[in-house]
Length: 154
Ligand code: FES
Image 1: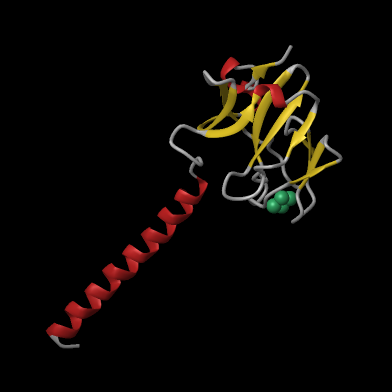
Image 2: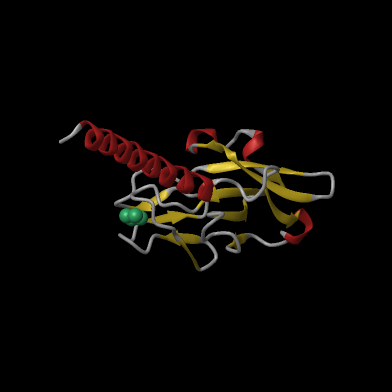
């Protein structure tokens, strides 16, 4: 290999490394919240009945909004086993289409192979009365009573 060829080789490797890095960044951007201010999932007054709102479950948002047990909360829809997007079942449970793990309405595992519950995202009501989901802050199962992880309903 000549000196010039060696330089070209190094430049090509650096470029390949850049492209790999860019690919990773693109995936991260796809997981970012819909806006810098969080995902607006509509007026709190829309959530009048218990159940799962599946409007934002698929990419790019990957969020299910739940009204249950006097709370509204938002869970990740990314299966904790190997990352498939879960489906809502019967407005009260979730099932992963890839290896069929199941979760209850709060995101607790009810059947493996998944072993870890879904995360909940930070959620709040803005000045217009709309519910905002902040995917930059998440709560594991032991943190689901944190007041930032749910909105109370009357
Ligand atoms: S990816 Fe969901 S059960 Fe395997």
